[in-house]
Length: 385
Image (cartoon, rainbow, N blue to C red):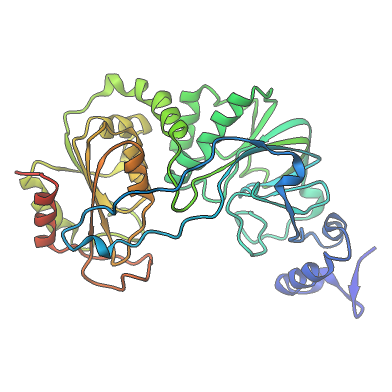
């Protein structure tokens, strides 16, 4: 029976209006009942504690001095420390999962801290704004492991927030029947192949099936939390998993600059001039998107100095040798994710901000780096021609 509001069938209203109506009614009508009527899964929240979570390593708060900068350490603005950590595994009978990392119980209620970095909006972790019908939930018998995440297509998030969940799964010794995951990008395919888990027989492609349910969902929950350390188990897992594959691909490039010129945001506008200076010091410029995953691992493993603008490619710092010097470029504002990573694997970290912009406003705009500031930073880091 079609639900009507003042005799107007709900499905004829605009999507935005329908979602607001569904949100209001979800506190009266069961979420899945509303989805059958409207094709929209309401946003109601239930705690992950309901599902007897099995704890997995916590993350300690980062302590110690600020990183060094020729402009003054007082310009360093770390993100606020998260008051929680996310590291646990849960099982959900009849659970529902989406391609964007949202996880629901059998009644359609969103499970807090099992859904990956969910936001308070109404797309339910789907990659587009389609209005998915209830009968488009693909149902599976048996156990399905959920490894989807909100930013899985971004290299850093894949390395540090998706792959570690494979380690959690292995340690749990849970028998894996199917894995719900994204694997359309080259780096995703390459890393999964190296793990020996790249198999079309067990993978459920989240881009083909954007919302699924299963008799039992197993959800390893892991996120790098703001202001907290990268766990030792995580860095060890990544290094042990991939460094052995890179040993026969050793590069001679010891000083590398990581370019973002082929991206769409936070590019260095005067990069040609910056690269020209760096060449005087023996640096080469690298576009990581042109390299295979293992080539990237080898490049960072053998580097003695790494310089680059803030971006996902610097996730590869996890593969650097102890004592490698790192200089990270920023727009006017700073972010501490890669400083915390450098601390975790014992690298020498320095940063350099643009002279233009608001140091309190983190954005996506391109920016320039002062050439004299660069030379002074190289001197501070002990990098000489």
